[in-house]
Image (cartoon, rainbow, N blue to C red; front, side, top):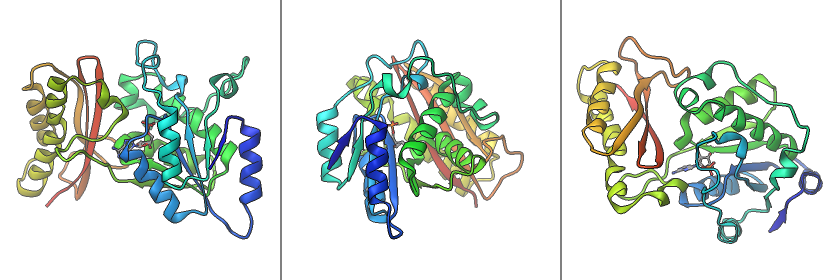
Length: 282
Ligand code: AMP
C-alpha cells in the first residue's frame, strides 16, 4: 500500500494505474476509521481496480467553536485498517498543502447547503464541497464512495458532481450501526457511558418514525413531532432538528409520500450526533 502526502505523487500514481479501462475508486475520510468507513473501503475494493482512501481532518468544514482541535487522530491504526481492506493508496495531505497561503477559491452550492445541517453549521458545507472538489481533481476517480450516515452531504456531493460535470459516479453506502442501533461515528468516542445510553434515542426515534410510516395514517409532520417528543423526553439531549422531508430536496412534505427521509441532529453534552433513515410509507 502506497502512502502519499503530496497531490503530485497521487496524480502520477493514478496516471500510471489508469490504463485499459481500469476503474479508480475514491473514499474520502477524516480518519479515526471505524467499521462504517471500512464498509466504504470494501465497496470500493469490490467495484474498482485502484482504491484510494484519503485521510484529512479538513479545518475548513469545522466552525470556530467546533471540535477541530480535539477531533480524534489515529493515523497508525487507520493505515492498518486501510491495508487490511486492500486499499492501494492512502492520501494524507498536510493542511498547509491543501490550503496554500493565498488560496481564495471556494466551491459553494446555493440551495441544498442552506438547509438543516447548513443552517446549524454555517460554512460547513462550503468546507466539504471545496475539499471534495480538490480531492476529485487530484485523484480523478471513476467512482467516489460516501455514507448515507451523512445524508445531506451525499446529496450535496451528487448535486455538485452533476452540476460541475465531473463524470464521477457517486455511490452511497448504507449506515453501519452498533448492535444496539447507534450509528457508528468517530465522535461516539466522546460520549460518557451515560451519554452513550441517551444516544440510543436517535435510532429509537427513527424506528418509531418507520413504524408510524408503515402502520398509521400520520402525516410526515406529525411523525416528525412524535420523533421530537421522544428525543425531548430524554434529559440532557438538546435537539437541533428532527424532521421528515423529501429525499431529494430536503423540503417539507405536504401529503403522505411513498418514501421520505427522517433526519435527526442533537447535542448530547459537548457531542453533536446525526442520524437518519429512509422511511417507506404504506
Ligand atoms: P468522516 O470520516 O466522518 O468524514 O466520514 C467519511 C465517510 O464515511 C463519509 O462518507 C461518511 O458518511 C461515512 N460514514 C461515517 N460513518 C458511517 C457509518 N456509520 N456507516 C456508513 N458510512 C459512514
